[in-house]
Length: 80
Image (cartoon, rainbow, N blue to C red):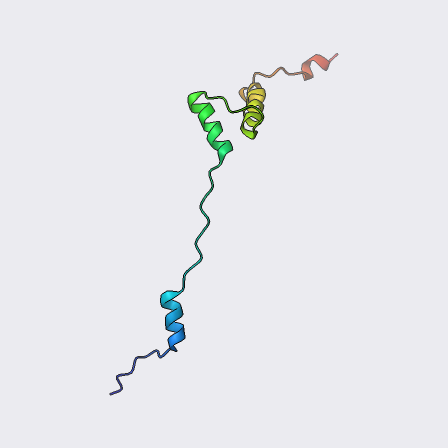
């Protein structure tokens, strides 16, 4: 009976399998804009002026009446 292994790969292939380092993923970078938005919503902390988060929060505050449905309807004023 033959006692040789079923797969006889060259030594370089086994070394590659055993010692090959897989590329590591880059660390996830924090999303500072989202963090600032959550701080504003949860704790009421205002973001630094001139940042993207300040612009987004200002836009949200400006559009709040439209989302709530309390914005004035200008179409009614145009009717004769």
